[in-house]
Image 1: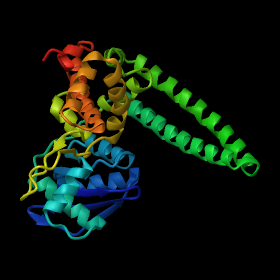
Image 2 (image 1 turned 180 degrees about the vertical axis):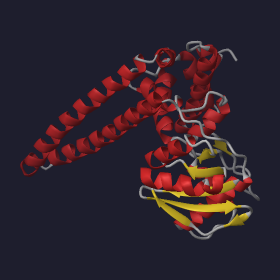
Image 3 (image 1 turned 135 degrees about the vertical axis):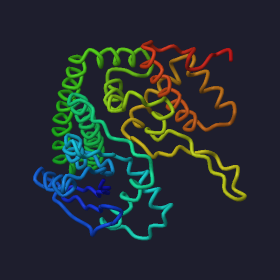
Image 4 (image 1 turned 120 degrees about the vertical axis):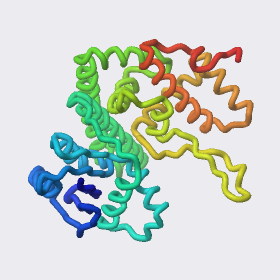
Length: 328
């Protein structure tokens, strides 16, 4: 069995291999379809099987992971980059180069439990890809609005830029509308996803914009994940801070997870805290205990995510009493 740690970037695959209990020098391949084939030939040399570990680096690692998953003699594990970062810190890694990163990933593979990566269906990948593109376009629109506002403040001197930004804003808005339509069309074409979207939208605060975005991220998760694992994956798990005399510091969320899902949950939690009586009661309870408003919204995000997990698991629409019983 060969064990291989791979540091993946946009151009190269930097690889560290342990073969027959012996670690060999660093190997490098291009991150292209040709490079993937060369890696597979190298990893399975002389008919050997291989276990490969890499970080989840979005589109850069996705095609490579898919190529490995389709190879019978190779098992692949795709790991949250934060897990590798903390492992490197715990291992007292003092530098950061591609070769050192590949070595760290190999050590993670050798010492941690192996969890084989299972890719979602093509439609799920497309769903997430469209959703994240909408996030990018909304970011562009926000920046363009800020530029437009600044140009208008300049009066006559800013008229040309103000006009150009106004034209570009309308263009971006049309693109967002088109992408929203394509996202919804894709969801409606898959009965299971369409049903889950309806369950999501039974929740106060989750509407036409946020529902598909949340669904796109959740659909990528393995079906056997538990509610707390969802929370950890999203980076909403509270991290205790107890060290020496510093035992009373407030817990903060780890943020070691999917920022897209975390961001998508913020406004639904904010709206639900004002419009849903059960969520509002939970909000008021924590505020009365001295929690800050932002801390309470984060707590609602976490509890909302757990509620969605339960809704999907039991195929039930939103029930505020399940979220928080007002008389409790």
